[in-house]
Image (cartoon, one colour):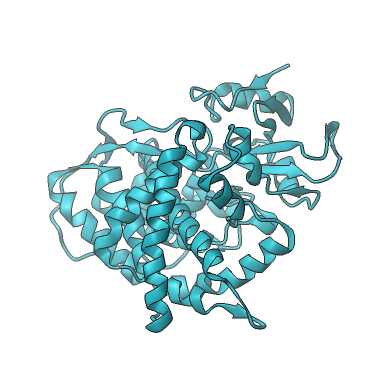
Length: 415
């Protein structure tokens, strides 16, 4: 019997072993329950109401049974279930309306071009520290109405909170808890200010959010804001690095995106299909479930392997990477599905759809400049360092990325 050790940092969920196993069977046993490998079964399971999110047990699965991190984790939107989940989600949702985020596209374009201006004449860049991280963190600052100079602190806290998804989480609790404490205190000051001086930003929207008189209390607001900063920043940074990595492995696609910036949204969907930062999405059975010959007892945990499902030949005759064919694919599962579909998916889709065409246009003939440094290809993955060289470009009139691409209702940080 094949066994996937997802707790092993060297295990690669995109490996030929995973692909070969998918050809033989739709599921496999792992160190974290079972894993689903095929698109049809994965998509159905994520929408099956006999399962809940399953992430609430993640700290306990790693030997963490008490303390600040354990308590905070259980209260995040990612871990809540049932009425508690739906209540918090309803109160948060107005702040993420599509029209609100779409109106920020010009700000995202200006920011991307500003960052590219700094390295385009050199013809080389360390992509994570010079673009992906400041872009993701400064967008969070824009969304929340924070001073732009806060981005380095925000990025640091989000980086430390990123260890929450690490398979080494058991050894990282002090760093995680220090980040929760620091970020929560910083945001508490912002909340207090917005209560007296409202602005047109996400924090004010959440402070004022109500439904039939119901509001988030201060503790709920703190938990939500800390998680939103962490999830929004980490996911965008990691997915941008993976997106550029994928596109540079297909130079024809990089050139196509430069020539066809209207394919930016399609590029996001296609990259998340074949190279997602969220490499597995967790579900837990709330009752005994029998699925196509697999018996899952109540409490049993199942992982949907995003890459395996997204490249399943049974779901798409030609699963090769092609941004022009993105709208012909079944929806990817990088944002999850069902009642736990990622609340902030439109933010991630929009900021990446803006950035990727601009990068392709302004970094011609780009190639990796060495192997870089990468997180394990399991759990939440991405680049720590990703040096790139390209044909130098002098800053000129900045291109504008047109709005186009697949419906944002198709297809996340989340798990």
